[in-house]
Amino acid sequence: MKLRKAISIIISKFTIFTLHLLRRGGTTLPGKIALKIYPGILESIAKDFEIIMVTGTNGKTTTTRIIEEILKNNNINYITNKSGANLLSGITTLFIQAVSPGGKPRHKVALIESDEAAFNQVTKHITPKAVVVTNFFRDQLDRYGELYSTLNAVKSGLEHTAENTALILNADDSMCASLGEGTSKPVFYYGISCEAYQGNSENVNSDAMFCIFCKSKYEYSNHIYGHLGSFYCTGCGYKRPAADLECTEIQEAGSSFTTVKWTCTSSLLQEKKEFVTRINLPGLYNVYNAMAAAALGLTLKYSADTISEALQSFESGFGRMESINVGDKTVKLILVKNPTGFNQVLSFLALDKQPLNISFIINDNLADGTDISWLWDVDFEQLNSVADNIDRLVTSGIRGEDMAVRLKYSGLDTSKIKIIKDYNMLIDEGLKGTRSGGCYYILPTYTAMLEIRGILKKKFNLKEFWK
Ligand SMILES: [Zn+2]
Image (cartoon, rainbow, N blue to C red):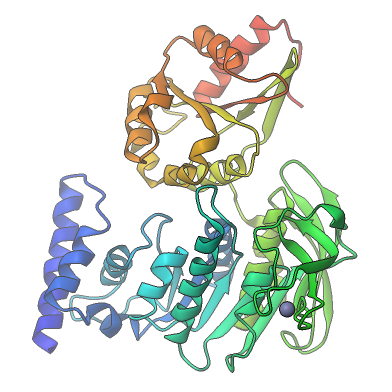
């Protein structure tokens, strides 16, 4: 076994090296080969790492990146996977890269983002110290039944974990919170309190309308968004659990940040304590991501101060959104400059309920970065979850063709993808293709943004359009 393990590691490392020489960023092949040679390889090398896993429908990547920031603030030596590389083979590649040829770990912590389906598979091989579950939402194409099978996949994935694996769960999501019912594992809940935000409880748009235990219809004493909120069941008494850590006040909600007051109870800290933090991200959904990451940090005994700092310094890369109104339509300009920020923007767009009309303008000048291979690290695949909602995707800029190729590889409907190199034509067609009252999104790299701003300014005779 020892020999097979060694051979498996060495051949896999050699494959990684070769792919690298060929400038192919393959993340799955080396792991696939390693597992083929020695199916126990992942289990065998991962046991020496302290493993944190993040799963759920929305917010995985952001939550993972905030946790990464917490680890950095605590000088922890860690490895983490890129969103997209979350299948068994990709994760195996990650671990193999992080051990010496003899199988010794070079890092202390492994931070793994995993989609819900892969989670069940991956936990058969690795044992996390803590698991964060963000939420369960129905993808546009899913049926209701599939939402429950996603929940069940995570549930059975958790059964493979250790007795002391800590679960960090969203209290406001009836599906997610149900994972903490009847388990003997340590459970910590996070959420947004009624005092912080009152949504319209009349109008609960629900993916999870009926009690998971008794099928009665949930009532809500407070509603945040989607099916998230203070739910309770009059049938069996199942209700939102008390949160160990929650946002208790939203002091300011900016277009690129949110200032919140958050509290944690003695289950996480020695004594109940309150913090005010300016989270470097906009939107309620990011408050959940921040609270999830904070709860994980406290569960692993990192200091509350380093956690609060991480929430403030977290570099989202989510450029400031600039908008102008043209007739009854809005043009929104969002700078894209790295995979993390780009992913943020894409998850933001995926939440938009309007039909999506997006132009990607990619340059490779010095100020943009001359190597555009980073586009392959951006999770454009997440747009598949809103595929029905996409009207059209146009690519442009010096590397417009490469961008179109990247979109095609993400599996999106190619008939909706078009290249328009002329900026004037791009804007005209973009606006024409936007429904009245709708938004036209332009996602440029840095120098492309300067060019497009100039053209918009001239075209619509604007003095200063961005605010
Ligand atoms: Zn019930």
